[in-house]
Image (cartoon, rainbow, N blue to C red):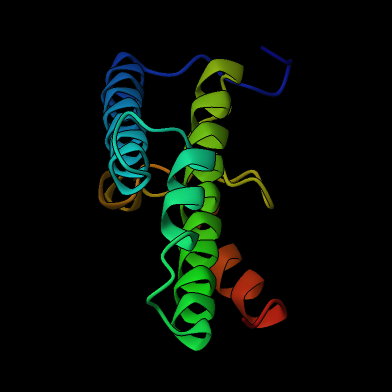
Length: 132
């Protein structure tokens, strides 16, 4: 803990532990979803080979399905990275602090989305400067 960091109150520590458990549950659920979408116990290479081996599908349909699978994979990978970053902040003792301004993130915001890295003000600035 650095000089500028204060020791969190017991209530804050309990909330952080609760958020950590919620994040771990979210991570496990996402990994299970990914596993099921990939064909259960089959690995990704086997699922892709089986999927793209179907000769009866048109090339347009196969291309469309491939694009959808890549988009889903990118979204899931992004979600997993955000959850892992929040868990890392818990380990580092910086969870609940905005990564941009360092101010505390409102508890209600963390309860709604425990993975958020920014306070509302900084998130709005970020979204304005990074339109997707």
